[in-house]
Image (tube, rainbow, N blue to C red):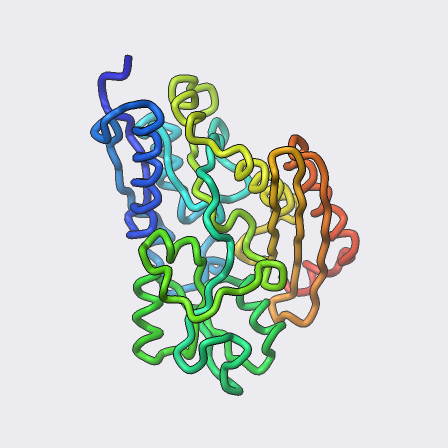
Length: 309
C-alpha cells in the first residue's frame, strides 16, 4: 500500500501547473485518494530560462523536458506531466509516454489587436509566433505579413500584444482554455486548413518502463482515443525527424477503432507545401503515422528538407 505521496514533476509555468493539477485531480478521483497523496515538484527547464531566442537555435523540444527526465530516470520523480506537443519523438532509454488525458480543442487561436481575423490584418502587419509551423502557415496565407519570433509564457505574449509590439499572435486554444482565457481569441482557425502541431491539445504523462506500480496507477486516466491519435501524429513526426527546425503539421482523429490522419510539411517561407491523408485501424495508429511520413517524404523528394535546413 502506498504510504508516501507520489512525486509528480512539472515545469513551473501557470499552464504547466494547471495541467499537472488536472492530472493530480483525475488520479485522485480515479483511485479514491486524497490530493495530498500527490506531491507536485516544480523544476525549471532550460527552455523556460532562455526566452530570447527561437527554440531551433538553442536545441529544440528537449529543452523543456531534460531536467524532468533526469529526475524521472533517477527515481526522484514517480512521473512527469507534459504538453504532448513539447515532447521529442525519441525519449531517453527507460522512459515511456504511458498515459494521455482526454484531448482538449486542437485549434490554433488568433488574438488580433488591429483586426479580429488573421486574413483581415492590414498590409504589412506584424504577427508574433514562436512556432515555425505557425510562421510558415501565416506566410502561406498572407505573404505580406511580417512574422517575428515571439516567445515567452502565454501571459507574456498577451501583454506584448496589448502593448502594441505586434498586431496579432497565435496560441494553442487548449492552453488558453486551461488558463481560463477561452474568451481571449478573436478567431479560431479551422484545423483542416490551418493544421495544428502534432499532439497539440493533449496532456501526456511520462513514466519509467517497468514501474508496474506507477503505470497501473496512470492507466486509470489514460484516454484510449487520444492515445491512438497522438501515437499516429508522433509516428508521422518521428518518420520526418521532426524538430523545432521543421514546419510540420499533423492531426489524427480516432473513434476507438478507426483513425483518420491529415499531415503537412512546408518550407519556412510557406511557398512550398505537401499534404497527405491516410486512414486505417486504430490499433495500428503509430504505424499509420509512420506510413504517412514515408509517403509525404517520397512525395516531396529528397531535396525538400536539405534545401533549407
